[in-house]
Length: 149
Image (cartoon, rainbow, N blue to C red):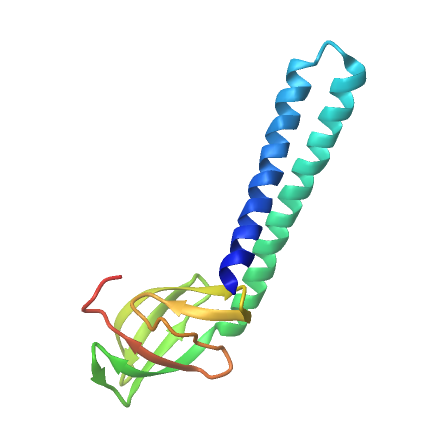
């Protein structure tokens, strides 16, 4: 079900940027006719400004959503071995530390993702599970540092 929605999303995004490029080229090539080039240039500037606004707003919203994921998570398996005293601490710079008995034994990067068919954001960690990790569960199934992904 997510395939057609993703295809439509990228198709519309491609069409929007193709239209922006068309407007830019059109306003440059028809610059001698001010009745056509000025409105095309203004429309280009408005749409380019709108695209920048949407991009920055999306990044800001994602950063705000990522703050909910900060903190400690229980880690059930580390390097394919069951671990009762393991935890993962997520930091603000999209990095994490693996802590075993109050000692840092590893680190990595994390990010949040969203999917068309899954509501909200979920956590993804380097060498971590491919399943969804929700911020309210605070449990990461495994981190396997022996296999680089």
